[in-house]
Image 1: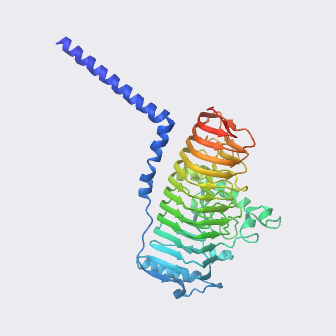
Image 2: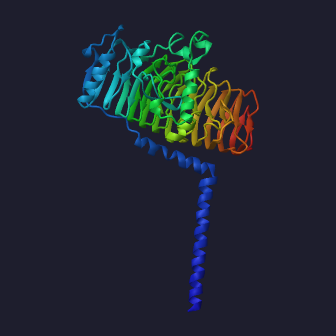
Image 3: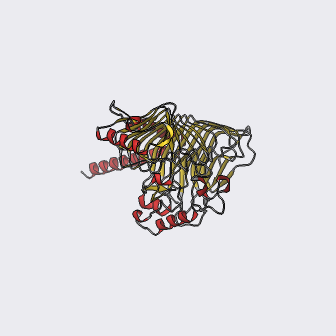
Length: 477
């Protein structure tokens, strides 16, 4: 009997050892083989896209001219937009139609099941009268929640909303309206003009002191610029076909939204902080076939700033960027710097980025005040013409630098089949000694006419396969 028990014990021990070896092998394959990691991740994109479904609307049209709107560019159409949207919403949804003409208005607030449809040769012209963007609404300014002037097109806790058509949204921001508040002379600011700095500092301090959002009141008498289009805590959002011009600040800024489709749009806006599209703390987002020519980042993914980002604590995740064109801007695809709520699973493919006024192609910017974890970033099949700084830049010393207690983590970055024709740097990576940038993988990438040597400070697991810089192969570091 004892011999049989020993045989069984031996077999059991052997089986356990085999299972341990198999399990360990699977961990090594998934955790240490960059190619398998990358292939496995890209296979998840169809699953993400399957969850992203543009909203559908009843076949009902509500023409704003039937609610008193005039397309003369002079008459105030604010109440006409409000009435048409309200009736469309009350009747179960449909399209609010903006016909050919120029329609002057204040803030437009969308409601569930409403598609604001702007026909070709139609322009929605937003008023330069600040009172048209009151009362203050619940919003975010640079990643911090507050009460402020309303974004030009705004929705709060709505479902099934859209802005579609071939028309134009014109914010009328210029060197005399909104832009001078940035405090920069190139945008019209002079010493006689109050800028945003005092209010900005006050808001950021309120967040650090955990002042309730409803007590962070700005708007009238204050100088925090607004975003152009901001759905906030919305589900099933579609922005399709429109052109945006002359924004006060960030152009398209979905916050805490799920199931978002942004496609076929053009953003041509060169004011201060005129980012093109900034999904913030959003999940399941598709940005495709869009054109960006901006005064700041083309696409910048965010998740809240410093203490407020950690309080809300919602990551940006599952964002797919396809077939976009980036012209001027600080970066093509950017993550940060307001990234305190974390960011993961970002996929960018088949994009073209090219301008002497475009600074970087892929950019991750953070610091130890922001903190946050940025991981699982994938880019492939990107053609970069000219950028003025680095093709890929990952930088832990952005803005305030290393002065905080929240050490950022950046890991698992995969770039494949990228070509660039001209840049100052190919790669500019600066992490921290205590938190190196880790698991960076470049495959089949070619960087031409590079002026300056790579900067690779505090980087571990940098894997480069078939990477050329100025025609010469560079090895792993």
